[in-house]
Amino acid sequence: MSELRSLYPEIEPFETGMLEVGDGHVVYWERVGTKGAKPAVFLHGGPGGGISPKYRRLFDPARYDLILFDQRGCGRSTPHAGLEANTTWHLVADIERLREMAGFDEWLVFGGSWGSTLALAYAEKHPERVSELVLRGIYTLTRAELDWYYQFGVSEMFPDKWERFIAPIPEAERGDLMAAYRKRLTGDDKAAQVEAARAWSLWEGETITLLPEPETSDQFGEDDFALAFARIENHFFVHAGWLEEGQLLRDAHRLAGIPGAIVHGRYDMPCPAKYAWRLHKAWPDAEFHLIEGAGHAYSEPGILDRLIRTTDGFAGRAG
Image 1: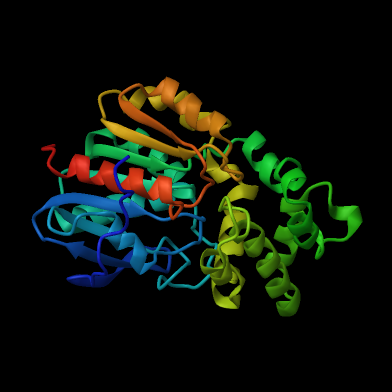
Image 2: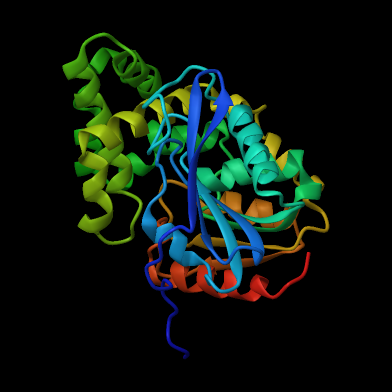
């Protein structure tokens, strides 16, 4: 068995900036690797998760010219936790603005978790701009997927953590937890807003890895992070991502001819493997990797190994 691959060494961006995208939103972006090398864009999870310096290290810096950015309302983008003019289709338009700004005709698109949702929405709208598509922790944002994570399903696997998740919500409102959380996350009571944000955010932080991983989950409890993460994620999910039910799988035929990879943990709790399997069937151009002994997070050793091997494999490929 060959040794598991891990992240490339720490790296600083060679260029950063703030891009005005309209509606009062300004998006932070950074560019790492080698200018003029293979173009790529990294789409973070959440929605509302923001980028981390670790994400830069999923790509060989000698062979990629990589753009990462904080999606509207999170990370260093402003306004912080802003929900106005913040939808899937606004973000798809932002990706196009960044591509045009960088002067790329096409690029490799890499997205994990919510990033896979956004990557699919972008690639199905602009297939001619996608040289390859690398997706991890597939989430197609159907009603069944939302209910599984926020109503009944994962609750059965993590009863202790579920109890903490539902604690801020009175029993009478627990029939629709996403709506109950929305009321608190968008309400005027700041203390209730922060309490709800931390509970929402920690539920995710503590259920995305196969085994407890405090280094991953702890940031989800930080007030600033939690507020943007919970408000934006809940906002997107209450609106079903402004997607028609089943739209991303229905339109997967638009990906025909785009090479890619689907990487998914067998024991991914937030995102059941069934949806990754369905995407695999609908998009046969992509390699399919169901990783044993892994949950949802990109940092799971088997998932990380496959992601690095995948970006390495596409690095030498001409568009």
